[in-house]
Length: 292
Image: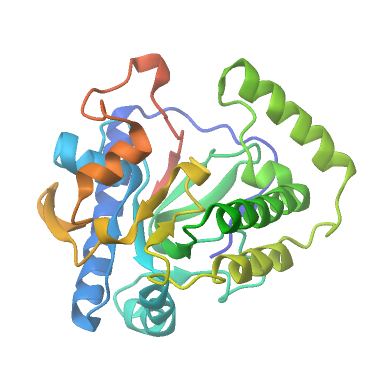
C-alpha cells in the first residue's frame, strides 16, 4: 500500500504504550519474514538499530520504532520473486520498487494491516501500514580508483533522488550538527531549483538500482548498505556476514552477521554498547492511528 501524503498530521500522543504495540506488530512481521526465508533457504541478517537492539537490549531499542533487515542482492531478488504471493496468504504485503510505480523507497517493505501509523521520518507525513524494511546488500569495489568512481556514481543518484522528491526522503528537522545542517540547507535550495528528472522519482530509483548492481555481491569481497541513514559509513567485508549466526530478539531468534561486532563497530563506533544521551537518541516519531 503506497503512503498517503499531505500536510503535517496531528495525532494525539499515546505515549510509550503505543510504541510498544507498534514494536509487537513489527515483531510479528519479522517472524513471518524469517520463517519464509528459512523455508526458501534465503540469507538475511538483522542490521542497523535492529542488530544493535538484539545485542544491547535482547530486543528492540526501547525508543526505536522500526526494523532493519538486509539480504544479499541474489537472495533479495529471489525474495521479491517468491514472497509477495506466499506472504499474502498470511495477511502481509510485500512492497517494492518493482511492485508499484508510485513506491518511493530503494528497499522493500513487508507491511501488515494490523496497525496504521503516521510516519514522520521526513518532512512530509505519511499514513502507512506498519512495516519492516528489507534492504538489498550490493557489492562494493576494493581498489582506490574504483571506490572513488563508485561513490561518486552512487552519490549522484542519491542527490537526484532528493531533487525528485526532497520532502519525502529528507527530514530537515533532525539536528545533524552545524556543518551538517548548513550542508542540508544548501542541498534543499539546490533541490528546489535543479531538478533534472523533475518529479520522476521512480526512474531515479531504478537508475540507482542499476548503479548498485554494477558490482555483484561477493565479487570484490566488500558490500554496501546504501539505503542506510548513515550512507557510505555502512561498507563492510562480505565475510563479516557469512552464513550468519542466531541472536535472541524479544521472544525469538533471528539471523545476524557472523561477525556482528565488526558490523556494529563500523556503524556506531567501538562504544556501541553504551546508550547515547537521551537528547541524542534517534526517535523516528511514528504515531499509531488505528489498530485492527
